[in-house]
Every structure is written in C-alpha cells, then in structure tokens.
View 1 (cartoon, rainbow, N blue to C red):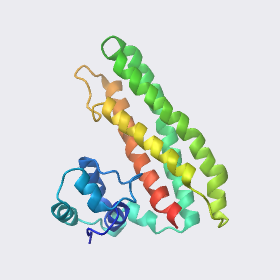
View 2 (cartoon, protein in one colour; view 1 turned 60 degrees about the vertical axis):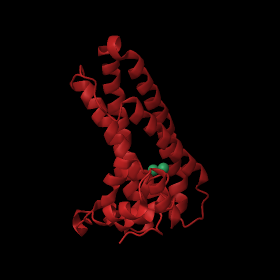
View 3 (spheres, rainbow, N blue to C red; view 1 turned 180 degrees about the horizontal axis):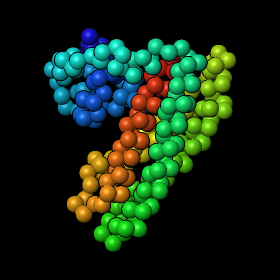
Length: 216
Ligand SMILES: [Fe+2]
Ligand SMILES: [Fe+2]
C-alpha cells in the first residue's frame, strides 16, 4: 500500500506498475527517486491524497509477470550481472541502431525538418558520448569493486545519470513527446520508436542503479 510518507522509489518498489502513471504526469522516478512522493505530486499540481488513491487502485503485478519485482530480489552479484547483460547490452545496441536510423532520416528529411533533426541528433550524440564511457567505468571499475564488497562513493555515477536524464528530457521535448510529423516515413517512425525504447530502458536501468544497487 502506497502512502504519503513514502519516497517515489519506495512507492515504485511497492508497485512497479505505477511507473506508467508517473511517466504520464511527469514525475521523475529514476534520478528523482529519493524525493518524497507527496512533494513530487504537489509540484505537478495534483492533490496528494487523491493521486495516491489513484496509485493504490493500480493493480500490482502478478509475481511472475513482474520483471522488476523479480530483479529487485536478486543478490548484489546477480543484480550487477543482470544490469550488464540486459541493460548495458540493450542500450548499446539501441544506440548503434538509432545512430544509423537517424542519419538516414536526416538525409531524407533535411529540407523540411533539418533544424529539428539536427538538434535531436546532437542531443542523441551527447547521450551516446556520455553512456559509452559511463558503462565502461561501471563494468571495469565500480561494479567489480562492489562485487568485492568495497564501499564506494557513487556521486560521479549518480551525477552522470542525472545528466543523461536531462538529455532524455530534451529528446522528449524536441520530438514533441515522440509525436511524428505528418510527412514522416517508416525510418522516421522507427527512429522515434527506438529513441523512446532507449529512453524507457534507461529509466529502468538508472532506477535499478540509483535506488537499489547503490543503496545496498
Ligand atoms: Fe549501468
Ligand atoms: Fe549507470
């Protein structure tokens, strides 16, 4: 049961199915997960009691269907392996696919959408340039230390997550919340789909690190 005294991350751990609703109203559950739920709801102009009521009416996942709930139960070694083999792998693959796809779209739609596509591509490249070394740092330095049981200072990794979070917000704005222009072709549509997939996956990925792995 979700209540007013919880942080956003506690509410998400109580019922991962509320993520969709939080996304819809713009509550940041990954980088801003440690904020009190009540404050986050007030900030977006809703009444905390009635909004929490809505959240409590969202059905909890059936145990086996709930990937996130299962993942949260993994021990630290397994959770690290999971993050690398599922999220790092998927995000890197998506980045390569998006890069190829966006480059085609830029060429094909430059006349009508050049300025907007240029902005999207530049922000995307900033995400790419941040994430490739970020994943390497986690895989080569921080995660092995965690596996050895060393205490770590996570402030750099968390700051990098926040930066990526704000770049994803810029992508969301530049793509008008992933709404395609009327003259979009299949590749345009594919690029937006992939960008949305990357954005969704990164949010779960960052949530797992900030609010679970780094707080153990
Ligand atoms: Fe990671
Ligand atoms: Fe990370």
